[in-house]
Image (cartoon, rainbow, N blue to C red; front, side, top):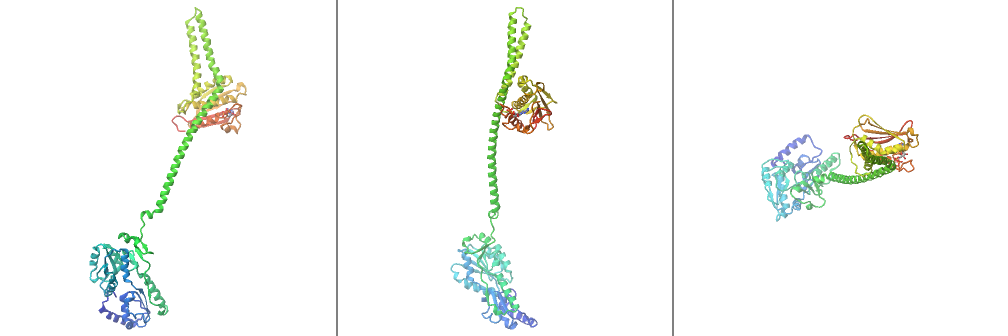
Length: 546
Ligand code: ADP
């Protein structure tokens, strides 16, 4: 009716319906919107005098006062027009210009008059522009060039002055696209289509409510059960994006306002993730820091431990050498005695006038040889006693063995022990500290000698074997024919302070094992059959990682 009917066409339209209704009477009539409502009220007696009527989707003021008198009810609004301006001034108190969009139909003109009346009290503050006589294009042009402090109020747009009819929601969106000022409307469903918001009417609820009433009437309830019902506004409602766009502070909104379409900032949107991530990073940083502290602490402890071990190794070494002191003294004494004898013999030769220079030369050569022998014993001893930093370098393991055997040579002689070295295939150089490896061999040899002190003299034999094992390590085995080890002491002997000797310290083997392990090798013991024990150790070949 609003779009197509002209006042002069109402009569023929009523006539058409009259003819049509002659064959078919409805059970219920539901006029939606003011134009339809006014048409039904006007022609009711002619068309459907007894049919119940539910007027909806309109303001009751647009109907005649007696419209509900006869078998009719109403579910609609009661627009508080002044409230529309109050809402605008609440949002933007400095607004001094409002463009009111209302179209050109009689209904829209009716409303224009009502709006004008209702807005009269604001005339001293606000200038109103009415657009009933403009085409939609002109309206768009107008709202795109508004001066500051303007607002647009979309009242109703059914048909513009150029005769083009409009869908109000589309029209709103098109106005929103070009307007340089905020827009407000009347209905809740417009929030999200471009209006800022305020106290808005609930068109949707009105429709639902009217449908409920209609169904109950069709089921037989009398219309008197349904007194006219006004659906008011709900709590004020706003579009967050429009508030942002027009820089309207949320502080300006009345208490209890609902804000829709709030777009959370990236920060707020991902707050959980960000906080979680930061917490993780912090925790990880703390853990990394703790690990660094722990690592440095461990390195310090390891360095201390190494220093202590070296010191201990040195002490054990000198203690072992102490035990060898008398035999070493004996070994040094021998060449010294020989030197003395040779020197005296030389003196005697010189006293005899017929001496031969050749004899004296020979004697002097012997003296030099003996002196070297004594010197070598001393320098070997000094190398073992000196406290030097550990240095891993390429070493010939056979040298290590030979020098150590020479060092214990006199002890072996005193104890009647034969020491032999069985060299397998050519041995590659190993990587290690010479003095420390000598200490290990020395310790194993001295232990082997002591283990044989009670076995018959002819059986006292130590065999040193060298080879490269399956893993490519240099392998040294020192085999004796002594008392051997009980099965449970095979491992126990490597524990510190385990000793079976009256004056033993019980740390030689434990130190030896830590030395070998620091080299990346292994030290272990086995029993021989039928008697004695074999101690094995391995060290990596130079250039090979253990
Ligand atoms: P200590 O020689 O001061 O006792 P060690 O750690 O060198 O300390 O040796 C620990 C113990 O291991 C010795 O007391 C001995 O009982 C046993 N042991 C070491 N070597 C042998 C061996 N070749 N035969 C039998 N027992 C041995």
